[in-house]
Amino acid sequence: MNTDSAWRDTLLQGHWFKHLPPFLQDSLLDLARLRELAPGQLLFQRGDAPCGLYAVLDGAMRVGAVSLEGKEALLTLVQAPQWFGEISLFDGQPRTHDAQAEGATRLLWIPQAHLLALLAQHPGHWRDFALLMSQKLRQLFVTLEQQSLLAAAPRVAHRLLQMAAGYGEVDASRRLLQLSQEQLALMLSLSRQTTNQILKSLQQEGALRLGYGEIEILDLARLQALASPAGTAIR
Image (cartoon, rainbow, N blue to C red; front, side, top):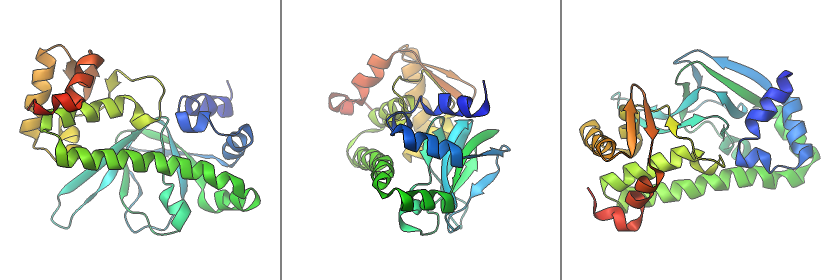
């Protein structure tokens, strides 16, 4: 299998790329370059100039920020075959957050200038990138609502379900999440102790299996019941 075919096979597992017009799929692969990052390596930082669009081929990207006091806000872990970096494509403004490799990570990179040139020639495809961004906005609104309305346990269950579905990007749910309890706590703005208690309870119920740096989902139905509005009373 050649490199282009391998990249395409990975990206076709994602909802957004799979539903792009064939011309745009081919054009993106023609423009793409491979980026390989070592564990902990920064791809870009908040305030950096826009550099293009990225897709994760394998590994994961940690997206967040660190305050002057050293407190970390972890927004998400971006995993294959998810895309990121499209906000700066639209407004040309600096990066809003830091993006750092969680482990050894391979990315597909579409340079900003090349992508803008493609869209200048074929402006109708702006809508395809708007759909990528709107999908993430929907997820953001759901997350904000959860933060305000849901108790801790339903929030944990819902975030695990979101990650299993690649935040709506993958068609089949992943069962094994490369995610530590500390990372999950940071993403939900919960204490590690609270998150640990909820996860251990779910493990005792047979919904999850906790491993080192990973969480395996064993019972999707149980998580879905806990994440539903009826589950908000469970703490």
